[in-house]
Image 1 (cartoon, one colour):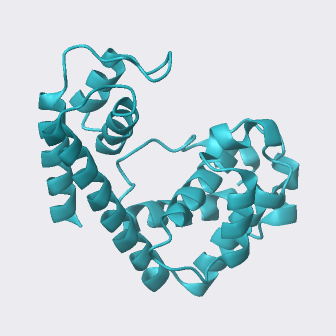
Image 2 (cartoon, one colour):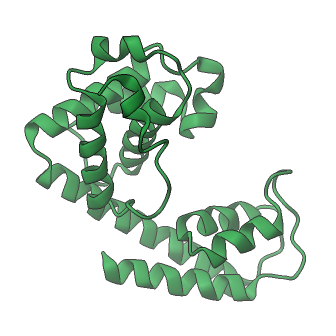
Length: 207
């Protein structure tokens, strides 16, 4: 996976160098300086998302588009390898607990419908699909890793104020979930890609 990460970095550095000086942001929050900050911080997945979204609003050169498309393929391969590692290396108990978190996110009272897509990048129906099929999924089912990551991350980080509901959906303490979450992130190569909600949040939940 390390070789794939290096290839991703090469493509994105080349793509960034080929960017036209003026870009039309695809939303009021996607300013050129934000992209520069992501690039300088080597947040490669976020750089890719920016470039992918910019490409629908700008006349990108064939060479630049080649690097963006190559990055997408490499990220898909990277995520497949990560999910394969998860399916092979997590214990049955760890998988069960992840399943409980998925069900809590999909069926529980933690996340309102009106904000679900903004938090997860998928609608609730997709989260339900993942929750109901886990752990009997294919490593090539790319969305599963994202739903797992966002489900647990939002259970910790989103101000749902439903701490009392935790035990109704999840059979272990937040601290135990957090440890499994870190293992999941390490196996999928997400460990240094983003911050989790709050590393100390489980302390506030009585863990």
